Image (cartoon, rainbow, N blue to C red; front, side):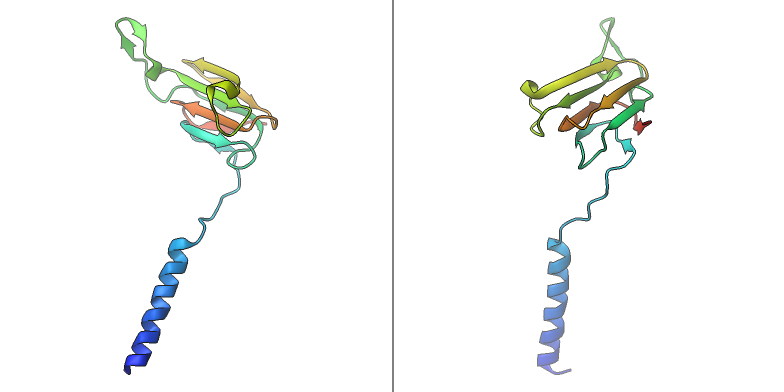
Length: 121
């Protein structure tokens, strides 16, 4: 094989690898489930609606006779994507199953230590 063909073939491989490496990741449409931990943007990552979870992802943990935060499931809605304490719209914590209504007027939803949230309406 001539050196020119080898050079062209190598350049093509480099171009394909670069295009793959720097391409924007595919973005999935918001679905009907929310993982139990994370911060999610309403309308981008998740849809507005009513969601339900079966509760905390960890079993009951007592520390010096008190329930540990690791045994609770909590959620917070925020008015901006920055999700800072001054942006809190609503919040709740539970040791059992619970529901949340995520209105289209909030910007972000954060969930911690919960089982999967399922959209029910």
